[in-house]
Length: 172
Image (cartoon, rainbow, N blue to C red; front, side, top):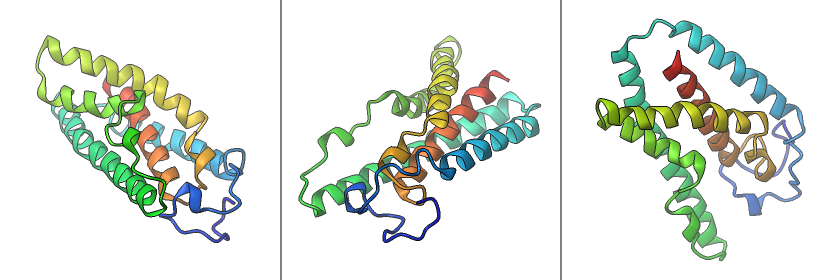
C-alpha cells in the first residue's frame, strides 16, 4: 500500500514483505513520485541554468562519490538479506554491471578524464541519464518488487531521478 499501514519496515527485503504484489506500481505512489520528480528536476534545472563549468565539475564529483555509496549500500543490504534468509550469497549483485550502474562508473570517469577523453563518459552520462533514467522514472521498476516506503524503492527512485537530472544538467 502507498500509505504505511502494513506490516513491514523501511529496510525489509522483498521476500519478507507478505502480500505485496506490486500494488504500488499502479497506485498513487508511482504518480506522486513521477510528478514530484519531474517538478523537482525542472526547478533544479531552472535554478542551475547558469552554472559554470567549475560548478558542473563539482556536481559531477558529488555524483561520482554519492552514487557508488548508494549502490554499495544497496548491494550490502541485499547481500545481508540473502544470507540471513538462507537464500545464499547474491553473486550477481556484487559487481553491478547493468545499464544504470554503468552511469556511476561513467560519472567517476568524467571526473578524472580530461579533454577529448572526457567527452565519452559525458556523452554516456547525458544519453543514458536522460533516456535510461527517464524510462525508469516513467515506469519505476523498483515498485514491482518493493512497496513505496522501502529502501529498495527509495534506492531505485533516487538513482534514476539523479540520472535524469545529471543528463539534462550536462547538456544545458
